[in-house]
Image (cartoon, rainbow, N blue to C red; front, side, top):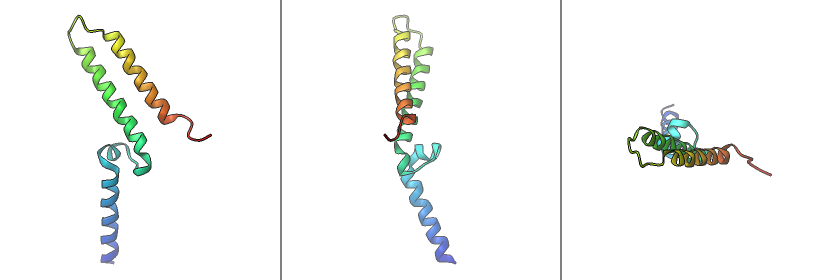
Length: 86
């Protein structure tokens, strides 16, 4: 019985190490690495957009930067939710 508990604990630790920090937040494992990268890109784009919105610099081309970030977000979401096989 103790050996089964130790094996279960060991496999759980291996899965946690395999998932990484973002994998722990959004779930998944080694097969969901592209999804984890997409989540990271979308999160960073939204964070950067918030910084751009609340920056009080009159010379900053906010509209162009926001549109560029939106295109990166849609590209990454299209990659993630797009067609998986032909």
